[in-house]
Length: 422
Image 1: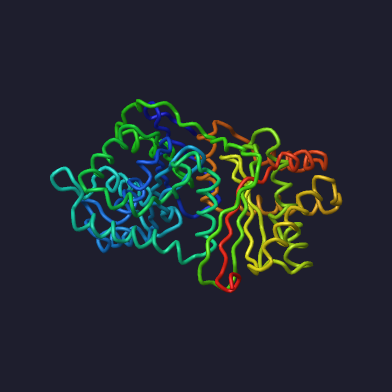
Image 2 (image 1 turned 90 degrees about the vertical axis):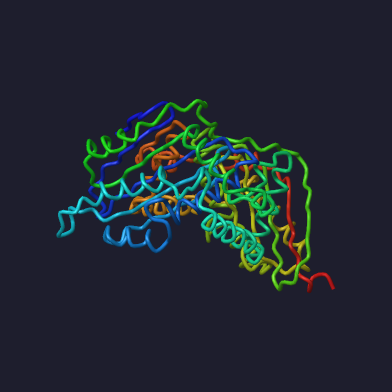
């Protein structure tokens, strides 16, 4: 059931008897802007760790423990041209416990308290708490450089979206931006977020829909003044390959490649693109895995992934830095082979079966239902499980070849080790 609580504020309840927990997600969605990314990441940290009712993490943990160990967290993420700040709480369904405690109602009240009653003094966030979360976020951002593959992926992202600073910045922000934010600035932004962001509230579980609705209606949300954020960002195809590189002390070099692939979520060619990605590098049966990693032994790992909210495909490979040119060439050969139809129908059927198994397994996750409801609202599209399965099964080899011919290599980032540069 979907109910509009105000313009731009929607409550979706997904009643399911499949799970013994209930999950509540409150998602704030805004158009992606360079100047708000770090603010939203820091705000999520504050909302996750403190509020007026729960001024520190111990008090917050005690409140969760009283709800039979409810799990609570907050975080940020990006979908195409939108930035999401999300609060999520999972609580046991009281119907399955020997208690009269109204856990779902208490969990909803907990989220509302955290969200609408932050730890604030004189129109700014509590300074010691603010300073602590600044330190924590700074450490988390700086630690990214320790994960060399993730670091390489971020550098590739900066190259792929060189024309758009907002798309370049990670969803958790930057240290440079963090150092310019004050507790007063952030509280001012928090107030604007409550008034301006699109809000999606998702409740999944064996719940009383009328009771859930009444509790959220009592908040009295106001209409959002802004229009619905766009769901997709279209990457600009440069039509030529540019590679940047960097040298660090590491034993395994990282080669990350970015391709333009103008296929978007549930749009034309989408289902064929899912199968194509499995064939190219998205599965253990893929050409990258079988030929680059296994047969040629040119990579410790090699895989591909799609971003159908921004129209790109990425390849990541861990390699011997001295074999960079060989790896680049053999990856290109795998794409050419698909474009020439060099794959069997039997392999395609296996890849489809793998996608179907993964899809059906995901239906056992309560979080899948909640996240899918958010994506459905963002894209204003809805596809039934049966429809999804039918569309995957209907993909033809001709459609896979057609998608493969839409792929253009644009950017690369090569993180080489000192050993490769001697």
